[in-house]
Amino acid sequence: MRVPEEALAGANLMEVLQRPGHTARPAATGSRVRSWRGSAHAREFALVGGAYLLYMLIRQLIAADIQGVAFIHAESVVNLEKDLGFFWEPALQGWAINTSDFLVVFFNWAYILTFYPIILTASVILYMKSRRRYRHYRNVVLLSFVFALAAFAIFPLAPPRMLTRDFVDTMAIFGPSIYSGAEGASFYNAFAAMPSLHFGWSVLFATIFFRSGNRFLRIFAFVYPSMMLFTIVVTGNHYFLDAIAGGLVILVSFGTVNAIGAIRRGEVDARQLIPTSRRSLVAIGEMCWRQPERGVLTRSSQPEKQVTGQRQYDRNYQHSVYVSTVW
Image (tube, rainbow, N blue to C red; front, side, top):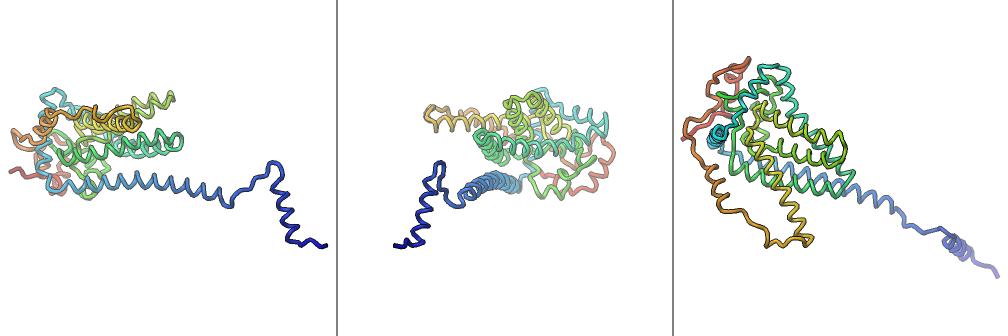
């Protein structure tokens, strides 16, 4: 009796499958895993990138019709720092300008190159090494967006570089002028000085560097925020109070993320959390709506001391960006 060829082929296949160590594998499983992992990376990139673009868009939208009050708030900050005894920004900026043009240019470029490149590089490395730690710090950054936007809306603030009686716009004089030119002002909110996320995020990433355990990164964890503090002040982009506010935003963001995590794990009862006191809210409101005691300093004010190029810059600049009207 002749055995059909189909039966023989089926018997041979069964023998192969029954061999020790042989396991049947679904077709294209590896490609599916790679595709899933790739889509997870893409979703993470879309989440962070989309959140940042949304943050920048909202920050620009809330800049409408706030120019006058931004200069009023600038005077309030200057007066408060004088009352507290640490209005040191003009002296620090003057020291850099009188020391060397190269030093000023160094700080101008440091303002740009020590922010996004370091943050993006550190984020990618952390993402590849520890997804759990990355998500924790990512949530802190995303929450800092929310707090910063609220601060920009409640307390619009003109940066020091716009107050030419006491400060100099170093980027406009020494370059690069992207942060101070009229063409650059159309892409960002020039009155979002407080809080300083430049300093706040430098503190956040300094924490990441210190916790890495690497000796070099632990040293850099102290150098990075210190250099950023000097940079934001020398360039005239932020006051010392902006840096303090930026640090507080990161501290509150850390605390909020940790509290939410503890609640989700059942370690803390949400009803036990102490809400913000009414006295703190009243104090913040009084500062936000404080009226100036004297004239507001604007780009139209004549500086007492001018460096090379300042007079020409004042004459050629688009005054519509800086000059405010106080009723």
